[in-house]
Structures are given as structure tokens and as C-alpha cells.
Amino acid sequence: MPARHPSSRSPATPVPATLVARSLTLDRGGHSVLSGVSLTVGPGSHIGVIGPNGVGKSSLLQVLAGVLVPDGGEVTMDPPSGTVGYLVQEHESPVGVTVKTLLARRTGSHDAEAELTDAARALARGNPGAADRYQLALERFTSLGGG
Image (cartoon, rainbow, N blue to C red; front, side, top):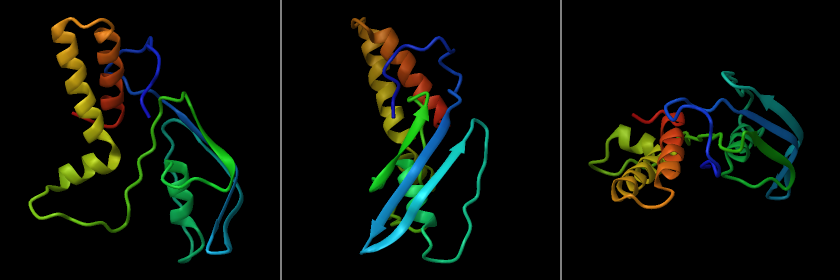
């Protein structure tokens, strides 16, 4: 999710973010998959989600990444410019597409790079607000591991 305001951070510095999930619930096919799940993941943290098949691990990760909308509860990011990437366990591999390209598409860095390129063109043309747009695009691209 791109930032909506200019930042005082250096454009090349990723924005540390905290992910907070409160009282998440999710039903699928008439069954409760998540019920009252809450967690906080701070900047620099690494977590693992383990458990038997079918207990909701992937569903939880999809809700945290915004791929699924929970039936109840909320997921917030502080600051809102933080991002969460979700890579599916199995996916199609189109013929001729590199692993690097697939990862860029899955993590959002592909779209971030396209926005950065557009912002650079606007900056070169001297468009109003282009410097702020470029700074935000560069921050997003860098925070996603671009470059």
C-alpha cells in the first residue's frame, strides 16, 4: 500500500512498520477457520506459523496480507505505508517467465517499479508535485526490496 503523504525519512530508507491484527474471525464453507485471533508483529520481527493441515495458517497469512477480508476484526499497519507480501505455496509458472519476475509480481515490487519509472518521467518533465511523487515511489520500491 503506497504512502499518501511526504515522509521526512530518506527516500532510500525502508519504513519500519508494525502489523496489528485484532480479534480476527473468518468462516469458510460454514466452518470457523479463525476465531478471535490477535497478534502484533513489530519492525524487524520474523514469525513462523505452524500447525497441522487445515487449521487456518494460510487463511491467517492471507488476511494479514489483505488477500482475504476477515468476517470480523481488523488488521492495521503503523505507519499505513507499511506493506505485507504474501507468496502462495504453489503457483503457475508461465513459460519464459523468470523466478525474479514472478517474485516481483507476487511481492508488489513489480508495480512499485512501474510507479517509480512513471514518477521519474514526471520529474524529468518538471510536472507539479513530481518530486514528492518520486520520493514516495522510491520509498515504496526500496521498502519492498527493489533494486
